[in-house]
Amino acid sequence: MNKSNPKTSSDNYDVVVVGAGFSGMYLVKKLRDLGLNFVILEQGGDVGGTWYWNRYPGARCDIPTVEYSYSFDKELEQSWDWEELMAAQPEILTYANQVADNYDLRDAMRFNTRVASADFDENENSWTVVTDTGDEYLARYFIMATGCLSVPNWPDIEGREDYAGRTIHTGLWPHEKVDFTGLRVGIIGTGSSAVQSIPEIAATAKQLKVFQRTPVYTFPAGNHPLDDDFRADIKARYEDIRETQRGSLGGMAMFGVMGRLQEVGTEKIADCSEEERERRLVEEGLPSLRRYADVGLDLEANELACDLYRRHIADIIDDPETAKALMPRGYPMGCKRQVVDIGYYEAFNRDNVSLIDLREDPIERINESGVCTASGQHDVDVLIYATGFDAMTGAINNVSITGRSGTKLKDKWENGPRSYLGLQIAGFPNLFTVTGPGSPSVLSNMLVSIEQHCDWITDCIHHLNSNGLNTIEAEQQAEDQWVKHVFEVADGTMLTAPSCSSWYLGVNIPGKPRVFMPYVGGVGNYRAKCSSVAANGYEGFKLG
Image: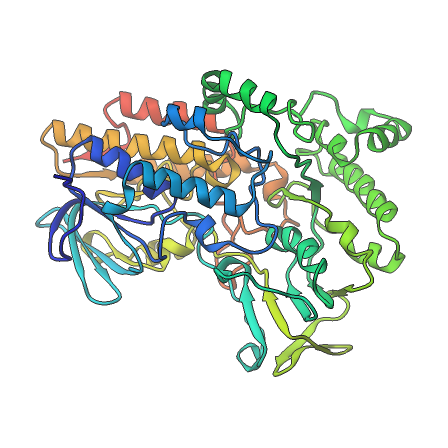
């Protein structure tokens, strides 16, 4: 009999997990292997997490998908054939469904279930998890596997609710195909989802108006179909690839192999002549800017790279005014998430695509027929919000979580998220976060970080159960030291430059404190730290 198969909401469980993305799916496998009684609660209608929700045109992986895959299933590694270097959303979701089918993962899951609150009972050393329909789940351990980019950000624009046409957020894209043929489309935002979707929408829409607040640095994806020889080579080397991933900076092994992906070298852009920089830009394109060691650490060197980048845009875009508006200025390259594109700039050379630069022509309000800017009215049939997410903390804070002495997690995080290793939070026993703030998470190959976190958490639970222990909780001093370390490692990089306003720092959400959230010290270093902590009797944690 499958102990993980949920029966009724009144059951007691060893573990309650929130989220059925790649983290929740792997946790089913791990918790079953331990023989534990558990349930997965998922707001969506099926597995897949971000790939279940983000179905916008052009959505695809932004790293080689042969590396963005589970390593625990050696048979699937050999039997699965990825079609492209960077697989599109439908293929990745098909992969997720295949894993769910292979392991009967859905037996442990309750879909269309939103968690509203979770409260720790100090007398019973247990969590009471309550859904929005009032169902209760009691468990010793509570795991938030809700993903880092899972709460869409809707901008606070006057009149947004007045619009009478169709409204879509890229992070909540309809499951059915959206046909833009003959339609006037407006898209607000030029982040990753917009960069991916704009060329696709432009190909069919009658008219596409792009409302841009901040121009983005984007590099060509270099995507291409995979052939049998390439796939055979990867499958023959998967064991070495996985080992390299786990010890690398970003959880990836194939820098230098994929054309667009290059290791950062030791050469400095400031030491190269202007002629040499130009020659490399012509021969190698924008990826040449990745080779320089000082671009990510020195603002003057970074500006040299930015100037080359802007010149490259001027060569691509036909209209000089549009080219100027698309040129990023005022913030360094590398301070925001690295965006990759397929034909993004070329889309602005189409007759049916126009750019509205909100720095010069700001939105005044949205009305029934479209977007009103300072210069006039823009009527559209469909209005798309590509305005990102409340990253890393949004999904966690959407649940009212109460720890010891009635402490609310949202109150504790009022001045920014605090955790020990991105795994646990002082004052919240037996609560684990998968790829939480303070871990490599969004600065890494997420599948590598997910597997490492899920392995660590389930090993920890097994250790507690095997030794007759009931609780584990981060010590306040260890948490303070780790938060300080996360900041110190990021300090001096472009990621925390004063002019940088990224969602890594939470500045895309009004009222969210400016705190750098992910750990930039590298997947390999982080993994070694977590392993050392466990080997030293879970150093920095209180076990009871």
